[in-house]
Amino acid sequence: MVKRNDLRSLRTLIAQAQDLLTTTNLPEGRSQRAHELLTAAVHLADDLLEQSPAAALGAKGGKETAKRGPEYFRKIASMRKENKGGRPAKQTKAN
Image 1: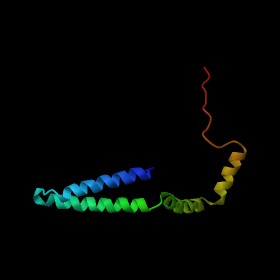
Image 2: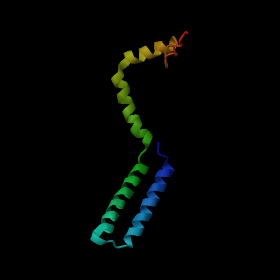
Image 3: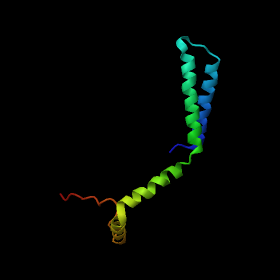
Image 4: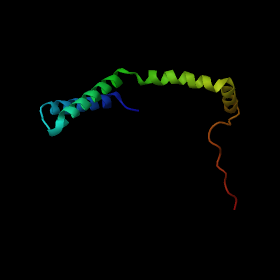
């Protein structure tokens, strides 16, 4: 999971690189193209900073749960009650 501070740092680095490119002139229009790409990257970072990751995941969670249906949850509940859930026990070899 990406931390918000990491995303802010990335956005700052991109913005600094963008500022550096505005003062340089590379042949064949490379500095202009790099400036355009960095502008798009800054906008993407800003958009990601505005979105709430929990809200994006929460919207999917209810739909996936509904697909499984009530039988699935009854089965899981019965397994929990009888301690049948989780990883199966390892089989030991008898020599």
